[in-house]
Amino acid sequence: MSEVDDSPQKNVPPDDADYQQYFDTVLDKLVDEYLLSKPHSQSNQTLDEQPDRSKEYSLCLLRLFFILKSLKDAVKLGDGDRLATIRKDKAFLTKRQAHQARWASLVNSRGGSGNNIEIDLMQENLNRELKKGIRAMGANKTPKAIERFSKAAWGQQKL
Image 1 (tube, rainbow, N blue to C red):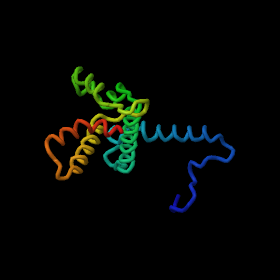
Image 2: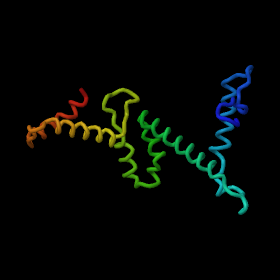
Image 3: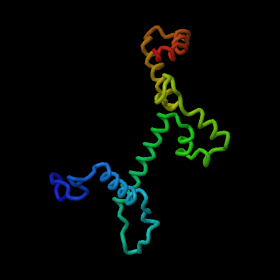
C-alpha cells in the first residue's frame, strides 16, 4: 500500500478461494519467512550489507510475543511441565529447585479448570487487600486488630 487509506494489493484472498486454506497458507509463509528465518548475524551477509534493523526488531517482538502467549496459556491450564520448559528451569536450577519451582509456582484458589494464577500474583493481591483493610481501620488500629484482620483476610477475599 502506498498510502494508509489505500486498499491492500498483496495477500488479499481471492473471491472464490477457501478462506481457511488461504489463511493457513499465508500464515505458514509468515512463520517460515519471519519466525523460522535466521537472524542477520547468522546469515551470509557481506560486510558491505547493512542488516535490516526493523526486520530484526519485528522478529524479536514476534518471538517474545509467542513466548509470552505460551507462558500465559501454560499458567491458565496449570501445565507445570510446560512452564518449566519455557522458563528453562532444568537448565538454570538444580533438580530440587526445578521440582520445587514446578510445583510451587501456581495456585487455584477458586477451583475448576482455567482458574490458575501465579502464586506471587496471588500474594500481591492478598497484600493489597491487607493494606486496604488496615488503612480502613483508621484510629482503631491495634496489634490485636491487625492480627485478627490478617487471619481473616484470605476468607474475606474469597467471599
